[in-house]
Length: 411
Image (tube, rainbow, N blue to C red; front, side, top):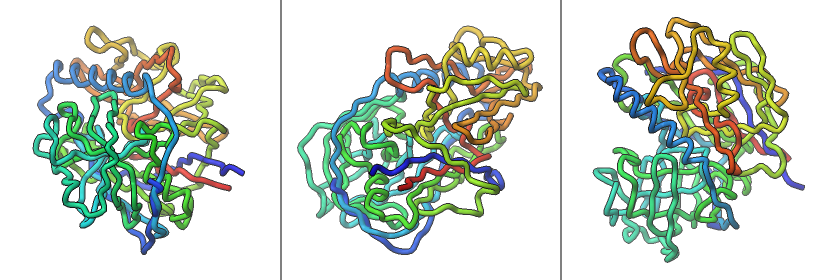
């Protein structure tokens, strides 16, 4: 019998602002998340326009196509619970935590992305795009095995290429021996920014470009966790005056729920059977300024910690903004975006499955200010017709500050 896979949301108590792989077990800690600033204080209108165009294009490209295939896995060592503290990079642009690779273990910061499924780090032999980031010397690890298989992966913001290998990987006290990872020698410029050296995908193995079992999935499937769940708690620094490029980002928990980070009941939503690729759940209702827009029963939304925006079909986005006083499509250079008066109190909420409605904080909805009291909204037109991608992508605009996100497996 296949397990039931659920996605869960809970209201945060307070916002934080300032191979066959083999698993291991010990007492638990949390991973700190870090993040970086979206717009510096001195950003010009042209800077904002360029950045927003990049964010929108990246989101379209990321979900325009994904490969799938058979997966292989390593073995996991049982631990029970773990917490990885995160770093918020560039004001909610991305969130990264720390892993350790090899024997002896070397620590690397990697972006944690629930919208992809591969793990990779920059190689010591990297020739493009690695700049001053820390790199992995596979020859210095006694447990590294070269699979002599080319590896290439593409994201909306660029890509990476190199070769596949297996090695010991650790995070928050959990370890997986024989974890498949990409050791990359070519990276798109600016995809990696110091101190980040790579990326860890947290989606399902069916999305894996390397056709390998993701680190988290090995731990979950081998009962390495005390409870079959993982959770994100993300901070918000977008629009915070004086915020640094790197700030405290929240936490990534494995095997337990940190009850100090939320209040009330957790709302679980089933992932539809056969949809275990992205973390995608039914989006059943959107409310705007107190008006309910009912979504079709077949609409699925991907929950993606590696994406800043919330993207949806143009017709649906237009319907949302039509309920916001003074909103209109933004001008040239802002294709896909809508603008509205900054002094308008925007109330937008999403309902998933049969659960409650979850609001977007008005401050998080306000993506950028472009002058004259006009703001750009964080809900973006994303039409992916002709691809197998879902209609909606729910990024950090929705996930930051006001909610705790849990992913759970139940028999």
